Image (cartoon, rainbow, N blue to C red; front, top):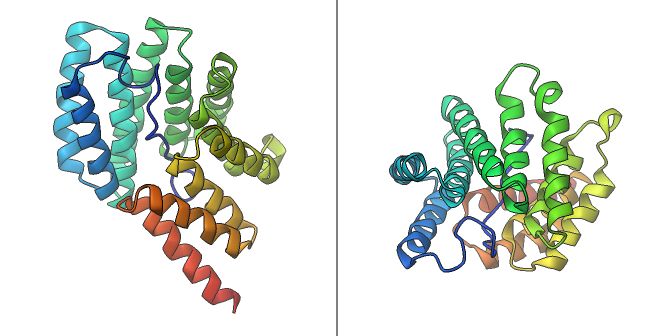
Length: 243
């Protein structure tokens, strides 16, 4: 994982995860999966992913593979909470493969490119020389997502985290990370992931008041998300240390 944890993605749009006009059961299933991600419920996610894998394989559809990639990404976050390195690698690899198929089925999908870039970034710490193998492509996929849809807020979240965790000699830039994350919030103030990662960026700079403001905003949007609770605890610990 890149430092703390690279996650995103709870915001659904017209091209994202569930196509417009999709049946209510699919939406209910995604809501269930999001709750499982928030609570670190690996077993619930396993069942949802198994069904999604079967459907995607049978239908060979863009929507099916995009949904599967999203579920694998949420599994990655759940696995992080359990320190399950084997599951982290499996979910990153399976998610990347699903996102690749979604891109192949619809090359002009901003969200498919974003998910591919995001999952590649999750794969980086799980394999030998991951940064050299996947870093450049991860960034290129996210930038392609922004090019295809400049209002894809979660793509700006991913670009921001790329800037944050990439070494400066390879193009990393903490100030640009903050700029991208602010842009994500401007586009979608309800993105708890954007607020979480902006809090992380501020904490890194020792800006505890700003970090606290952002993590509080994230927890108002999704109070049950374990990842946000973890970051809030780190901010509190940093405030104590600063005094």
